[in-house]
Image 1 (cartoon, protein in one colour):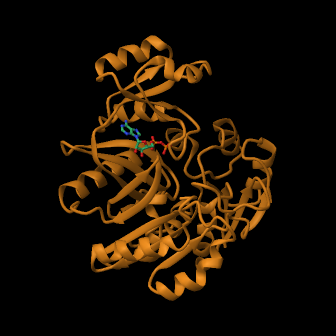
Image 2: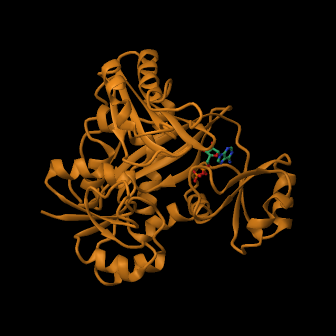
Length: 375
Ligand code: ADP
């Protein structure tokens, strides 16, 4: 049986384990430390920024894939030059690693995006501010996540520290959005591509808090346009594996691309319990170039609520007796992490025929694991 190697030991790698077990695949993980979320798999300890560590790991697997996008391009290209299969390939992954390159590339495809500009000096931002109502979003091109590396600013003085780093920045118009959506698709090397229903993602403080699948009132145009955008991105960039396209639905009903991830994504966690094929199994199938599974939903609605922070004392499992007794239909996913304010330590999934009821169930179950002062 083929062996899949995942670089990064976070919860995304962890949640590939049950899918690998079911398919009888061996999953190996390269983690920074022995205590990481995915350390239940066969784990090598090493740094994703060390060529030696990554090479030693890659030589033990049939295909290398990722839990995050932080492996430097030089290392990925070295693996490829040694004949190691890397999926998604570095040429595609580049556009999930660098938001500025992503904007430049997707502009070539004519895809809908916020107004944006490359910022190298204060004068570049001043000009962009003048054209965009005096208040814009500035992002570091690399290394951001969960809202870190994103600032809303009205003057260049507010990004002095970033400009001093000497790396180009991305400025974007401050989009007036009605809501945020995410379209997940999976593509394999043979070209087959499948799409899950477009979902609504509710962010709090730059972090995904809840996901509703499908996005309410998305049937028809919104669903079709979102799927078409993600298909164009996946095919245009040659993505292998799961691709998440985060979108803004603007108040004037346009869909604009926010950002890309080329791996399982928080907005796809609902698929674990409420779709025929979960994003984790699909990612494994796709990187092994196996036929993809059905993306059909198992019920009318699915709701995912993240457990952010977790209990102030003890572990999530301490809350199981009450949570399980009260919410037998809700599925709990525990990442095995130490609770810390704001940290994603797990999520719950609920599904059913009625949206309001499903939202209430999922929120109630998640509340058992949340401490007000840590949420
Ligand atoms: P990260 O890489 O940290 O997830 P994102 O680029 O997705 O960063 O931005 C985080 C959040 O900030 C988004 O989910 C959205 O709520 C808000 N945001 C990002 N870009 C814009 C924009 N151009 N206009 C308005 N809000 C934005």
